[in-house]
Image (cartoon, rainbow, N blue to C red; front, side, top):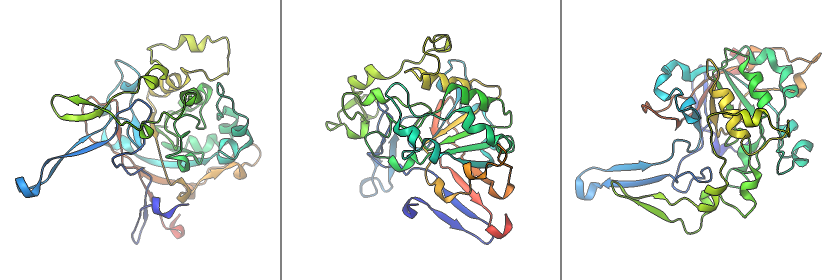
Length: 323
């Protein structure tokens, strides 16, 4: 574990861990998304105070996806009460199953990323039914900044998302990856992460000035098109293969559930948390152990109408003696 990436706040009764990515100018973003920008609109020397204009996309860094992200009539951020963003949490460790050093990851193909299956998750059913937040650990956060971070990450299948929807208590699914299903083809013509765009060109915004990066047409042409229905995917002739629309399809399964499961992407520092793993499987199941469960808080800014929002994710651990 890289201790520099883990902020600990200790008290007599608990330990707080920061699971969020720092946001700075030049922070990596999903291909095609706007870069983070911080520009002063007032300075102490000239105005007597300092003020800063922040510009960023709704899916910057560690962030939450809301139903409006994929549904024209989906709930927006402000539709969720503040207590929705606090919950009992468990981490399932799948690094050996689909992590970067796993045989399944080594055997992946461009059209078939390494993906979790229902068989991987079913032994943990008693854990999933006992929590409201579920974090899936794959080790991918260590790849942040690498050229394949946004294009070749461990993925989920539609079947896994449908299985998770069967747990009505589950409110938030947390991932180290930047999305649900990877798109290796995005990297077919070279590294296309916005953070690696050498010319870093910008478009002029008439209200705020030069803030928004010009979209790279190569990336825009390859980004999967978001549609309102997924019948083409459900009826695909290549059943079981993760196609270019699979990421959108998996989002719609989770965000379109009743109640919806919000998607928390870009988590870091999960090594510092208690977890459940394959070594805990006994008679094809993992018994629930409350000592490995902790509280998580991830309230977003109260932006009305938002489809997503960066969040500060904080985990609260009790002292070992108290668990």
